[in-house]
Length: 156
Image (cartoon, rainbow, N blue to C red; front, side, top):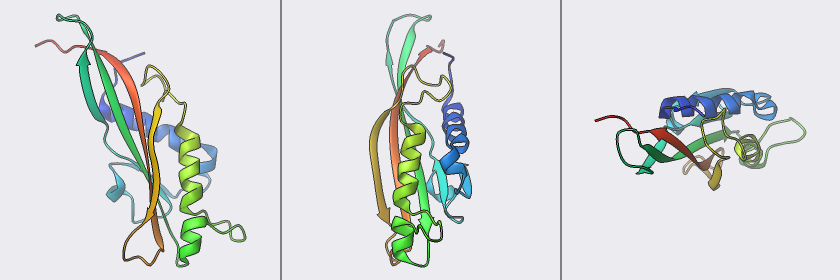
């Protein structure tokens, strides 16, 4: 396993999502940078910046650190019919937020993202909600993951 920066981990998660056959079949925009970076084109998937919490495993300059990384993935749907934005429509093939959320989960759960993590990631949270004031036409989901990396300490 290599040592990866937060940006590299974000790119690995994004690559995994883009490579997923189900998601790539209907998601119109994949991006890094959080929910606001992509919500002008629907459906979208966006990976937020990685958050780290580090702990020393061994002491000294040549020691090792354990980094717990949290990754948030956002998705969004929009449709003029609120029920289609939420649940989709089999007749037209439109995907709602419920399907988008399930497809994101299927793509990322039990994935080490090309060696970025020492073990498969854990699911912290998965939720959906409509944007207030949108009349139920705009929906978003958030999938939060946690993974562990072990890295060399940086010399002082």
